[in-house]
Length: 190
Image (cartoon, rainbow, N blue to C red; front, side, top):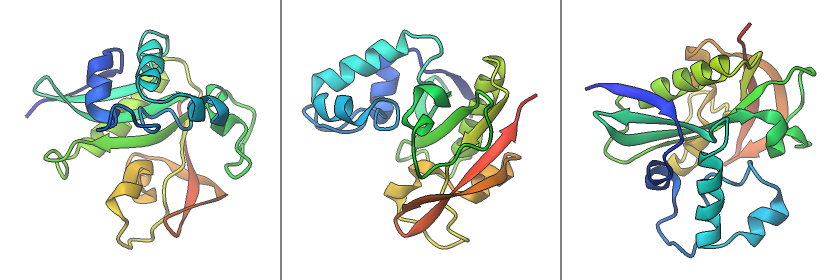
C-alpha cells in the first residue's frame, strides 16, 4: 500500500472525492467555506463543478488529495485563511495577524477508511502549507472528548487527530457541530 499526497490540481479526482452524487445538487465540491454565502447559494448543479474546476487551475490549489496506488481516496481542503470565509467568521476567532492557512474539511472514500488516510491527509496539508510559505496552519475540529461522532460530521476532523499531528489548541470557538464544540487547533510552521 503506497499513499501519495499531492496538490488537488486534477478536477476529475476532486470530483470523485467531493463531487455530489446528484449533479443538480446545490452542495459540496467543498465550496461552503471557500466562497461567500451568496455565491454558494447561487451556484447550482454544473456551475458548482465549473467553479471547482477553476480553482483546480489556480495557485495555490484548493486542497490536497491522497492517492492509494494511484487511485484518489482522500481529500483535505487547505488554503490561506484570507481567501476563505474563516477570514470573517464571527464564531472562529483570529489568534493573531499572521497570514495563516486553514485546514477545514476531510473526506475519505468508503472502503478506504481506518487505513491511516486521515493522518496522511493532515500531514500532507501541513507539508503543502509549509511549502507554500505559510507561517502557521489552523484547523477547526470537533472536540468530542472521545464520544462517538456521527460519521457525516467527521469532515472537520477531531481534536485528537490534530493533536496527533502536533497541533495545539490555540483558542475556543463559538462554533458547535452536531452538539460538539469546535476548537481552534494550530501548528506553527516557522
